[in-house]
Length: 386
Image 1 (cartoon, rainbow, N blue to C red):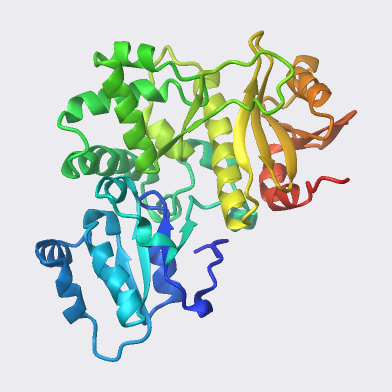
Image 2: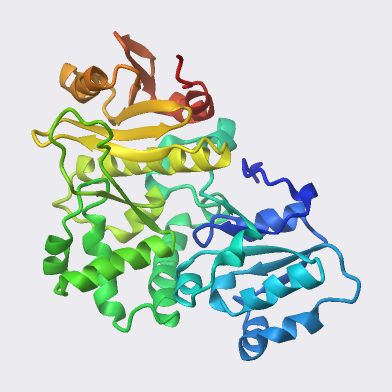
């Protein structure tokens, strides 16, 4: 399997949280790097039932004089365990790794995530850099980059099962919604807003639910780390900007598994958002792994000028437009050119479906595969001067 970019200094022996959607490889990574750690998997009925009934019992499940890592998988299933973890860190100097695919229950229980006594890291689907020479953009667009895509005999079936058993059933089991039918319809309706502006009222109307419930469902998706809303970049804006957000499921394959398709759906309607999703998930992953501290936005004016992604942070300002076409048309560059006028310090890129890097004044057009494979250099080499 691929060598992951996740870089956690395990030798420091400092407790930490490791968050990420279910199935991105958190447990596999930990078992590979800490084969002798003590593991408690709360997805297993035996561990869950025992500790849910009596969280304090974990004290008797740790061997005397044990001084190595203790891993609790899916800690959000028993938030009360954090009180025990907190005390064990303080009183016995134990070191914990707490994995989670949601922080919703942790917040709802009033838990303060160990009051700064544990660091926080994130894990993402497998990146282009991690895939190296095995990167296949077409497969990434169609099947996404969850680890199971590379190991399952039928990755398409895996994705359907993932949506059914995790995104739908897990939501019901965790008590996040009482009506799984409404939530399932909402997911499908939301998938039509992938990489697009979100109109919560319209999505609620099409789903047949109240607007407040649709807003709550978006919050559930975000808390489960399976979807993200992105805000418009307005810092020192020189033009009138829109106020709506954009929406992305966290993986292109998961998006395609959720989105209903039929003979009336064009290639562009599905593959365009999938390409933008793939770039978005790569940007988030590399930004986290390299600790670049960019905030990710998009840019769209009231009169329709748009740039897909704006990265703003201590390392600089980057504007990225994504097009699946193998050709670069003048109108494709218009948003980037206008953004560059407003923000001369910005570095502007077009990621496109061609095979040759091209240069247009202050805009660099990169083939999508090359762009994703060198995204680490692109983010790190954007330091502002002066």
